[in-house]
Length: 204
Image (cartoon, rainbow, N blue to C red; front, side, top):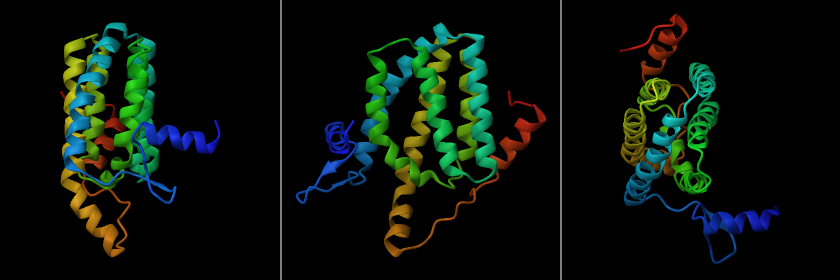
């Protein structure tokens, strides 16, 4: 797809906004927008996860555990870009398992809109909890517990939205002043999860 056409498509999907000088930019941050995206994600991604649980196979669970290990490895190396990539892969493996050609494009559109905000979570204390949440989601899928899987993904999405909203003022202030954000995790949560994963233990 030509670059110009790709940009037009992203503008149409509201991932970018078009400026008078023909330039484009990410939409300005708005707590209301994040909350609205969260509500819609809860409905659509929750439903996809419910259906994925009904279709769950040992092969799906094995792949999700592999992706979770990749997230853990990236987190342990403070590779936030790697964490984001593995996180996206983790979620979309689940959504593809729902088997709905209608839901998937809707979810992709939502991720195009929420994606630019994920950067504020770099070094956030909740990063370790996100990894724990992924473990819980896998467990519910392995049990083919649709309602449980939907509840787990809903907690996960809600927590991320709340953290983005709470973190944005600090992020905006640091960006405005030219301050450099640290790439180091801001909490021992990640270290604890990495150590737990390596020892093969899980929380109840």
